Image 1: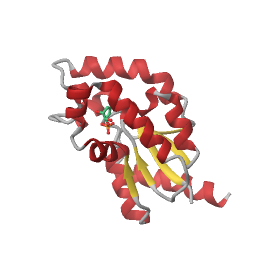
Image 2: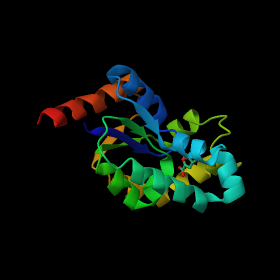
Image 3: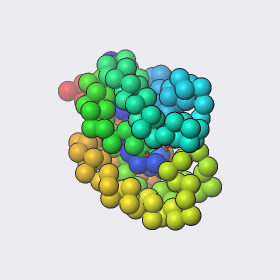
Image 4: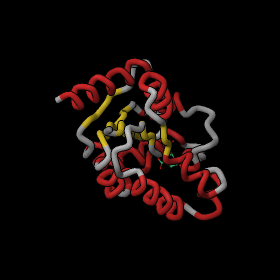
Length: 171
Ligand code: S3P
């Protein structure tokens, strides 16, 4: 059975939506960041600090390759997985990729107080988010199924995804 794959910038709600989808469907939930942390035996902040972002991206690509087949799972991914377009091609082999979108204001609100995202540990969070979004915009835009999340509950976003997924399965 096809996977439901969630991609999108930090703070667009991938983890929260993946949890709801898991609850609603009973499909197993796999999170690329969690798998990477388990393999590395340390949190993402430590991987970035001790080994560097390139080392993290290598692990991320390995995990994407392993998840490149249908297993009837909900896959939640790290926001930077699009940086290597091969990752999206791999993940798309296993199911439908959805890109979650949110405005900068909404992202800022959702990541407020967060200390687990190394790329956002900077005094000018807004500036950092804006520059990363600009840099990655074409990569996110290349994903065919875009889901706007501003002003929606995670439940509504999950239902929107499920509606598309079910109609795709039965077509
Ligand atoms: C990253 C996003 C994070 C995590 C890492 C790098 C990024 O995942 O993979 O900190 O480059 O955007 P979330 O999108 O789940 O925060």
